[in-house]
Amino acid sequence: MADQGIPTRPLHRSRLAFTSRPRTLRYAHIVGWGFEVPSQVLSNSDLEAIVDTDDEWITTRTGIKERRIAEPRETTTSLATRAAQKALDVADLLPSAIDLVIVATATPEYIFPSTASMVQDYLGATNAGAFDLSAACSGFVYALDMAASKIRTGEINCAVVIGAETLSRVVDWADRGTCILFGDGAGAVVLQGSDVPGGILSSVLRSDGSGWDMLTLPTVSSRDTYLQDGLHEMHRIYMDGKGVYRFATRIIGDSIKAALDQAHLTPDDLALVIPHQANQRIIEYAAKTLKIPVERVYSNIERYGNTSAASIPLALAEAAGRELLKPGDLVAFVGFGGGLSWASMVVEWSALPGRPARSLTWGRRQGEYALAWLRRPLVRLWRRIMLLSPQAIARRARERAEAARDRAQAARENLPTPALPREWPRRDDAARRGEAARREPAARQDEPPPTDNGA
Ligand code: UT7
Image (tube, protein in one colour):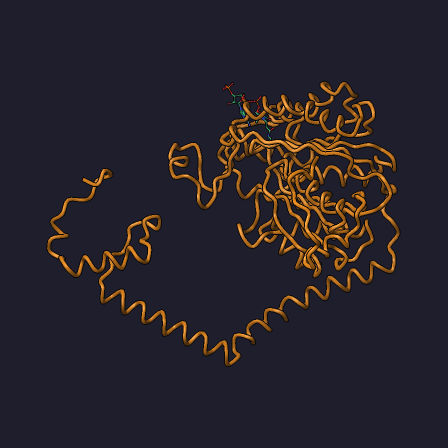
């Protein structure tokens, strides 16, 4: 049925690459995990000096006692890289074995380059593709699903999936409704392909964009009108806390149940649920709707607050490090937040508890990190040298001459300077306007401005 309407043709050479890949679906297993948090702690009582709040309100309404705040030298990239290195240590794999790096983040250092590209470079993962994924607090589950899909088809064998945030840099420190919630950190997992059944069993990704304005972080090309109400600010988090709370409690149970259904499982089969750490009350609500003991829903919100895309991998790495998971255990992840978006996943845990002893690969891994550190300045130097090649010098001279010719031509035609980039004239419009200005300069000055209906 699925092939209906697709004409069969003789196989072209360019499609052979796909057919030579494994035909049977593989399994994507979590084989490594790690997390990194800044050492600087901001407690509830520290917050009392910043906004009108108190420890009692924050603890009873959210469950948060403290959160970590990045030092100026710490970035989303540095936290993500450190978490990934720890995950590679547990997996005992080399950076050169990684095929894909995905970073789920709402606080990248740049819109581009992606944080993932920089992490790829710092790790020395020279055989990997890299991209960032934006799905707010659901981002990690989305990213894990993307990587697992590529592993299942046999297209790649190994991926590093990271959730990393420095939310303290985009929090509105004057808004007591949000600044008490968020913290910084990163968590990472290594996913590896195998023919052994297990690993990621099912996932359900969902979105309801009609609620886009309930949780926002406006950036470079945000609508001006959105930023004019005094509530919203560029590069600052805005949240309709009550609205998002209602949304989270509405979807959390159903979303996990949908992922369980897909894997023909029930909540009773779960050894652990690792939800996005948004609010202790939401975490407890999840246990109630799933009808499982609250101890089976992992929580570390007390110590790290809400770290958005980092919260699930951070909690997972902590739980795995504490040996709360053993091979054969079933664990569910659920993320929810801005978008609105939400995502659930069921995983059969296959890794042995505890960290493996440091092997020979540890030394080679350090060697690859050192090579990456050396490679970066050398490659950049090489690029500069290439700029000095005779062809490059001739090309730059040609470009400069062309630019000077264009400027002289524009000055001759006295082209108007547009007021806004949005109104930037197209090349042919500009030429036409220049022509008209040359023909009747006096008449133009007296003309009334054109109206929308062209009158
Ligand atoms: O990560 C993405 C997903 N995010 C979430 O899932 C977050 C969901 N939302 C929440 O967790 C909760 O809505 C909050 C923790 C953000 C807020 O809790 P709430 O119980 O919904 O409080 P509220 O916003 O309704 O505020 C209740 C009262 C208000 O005072 P009045 O108007 O009743 O006099 C607030 O002004 O508490 C006041 N308030 C505070 N008081 C002391 C709000 N923030 C604070 C504060 N300290 N930090």
